[in-house]
Length: 322
Image 1 (tube, rainbow, N blue to C red):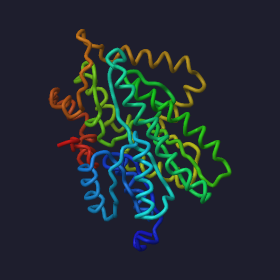
Image 2 (image 1 turned 120 degrees about the horizontal axis):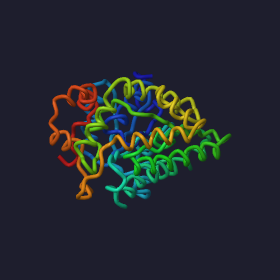
Image 3 (image 1 turned 180 degrees about the horizontal axis):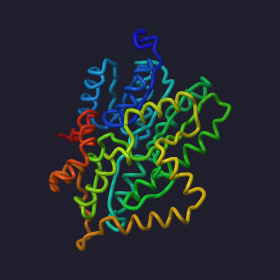
Image 4 (image 1 turned 45 degrees about the vertical axis):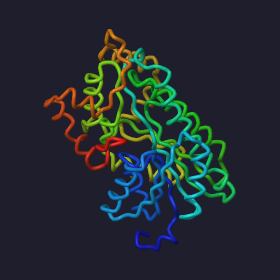
């Protein structure tokens, strides 16, 4: 289908398409013959994504859109369908990562996480559902997280939003049974997308960055991002209800289901091993890029070499607004 004229190719829509996992999901859909429209808040990063997709040999139609804004998102969906064709498949990948002890988070951190990773999927799917239901055809997917099934210390706003996204997509999937429209809950663990440099850190930012960046880069802990994107797209296009990615995610979810008290004890131990909040409160939010520069650790750079390579390959090194 790659050589099929654009007018005859099915259309796929990806939210959060400008970098990292969203960019790889866009690539995977394009490789399967879809004409991909990519959404992001940052027009400059979208331009870089379009160039990266062209380098890979694929078309990519960029649209500036904010999944937190329901009205404008509906307008963009209408524009995409007017310019490219009816959306047959759509995947919400947009998200933010905030890392730190719970006492360093304030209400704005929770609002930002929930608006992006809970209201975002709701706005995104609800903008597409009327047309898909009328046609009795459509594939929807939402990237949640293992943190949406097992709440993780030092990622509480993130887990809160992801728990909501899991509940929303699982309920929506059941509600749409027999309609011709499927909703896939995608549950990954850590992936080597290079997103640790785009994460935001509070508390002892350098120490928080160190443990998170290492976890997001080491092969035994994190999953190859390209393989993850392929499995996600497989699940969505097949209409699966839920896709659990990586052996660690599958084991963690099953153990938690069978022995939640044991899981809770393990997470409590993990919390005690993670950095403490500084005496001054530590509410300053520091980007991964800045935390990495402040830390300037050769040892950590060695541990995170795979993540660093992923950052460069998947458009994560761009700083929004720069």
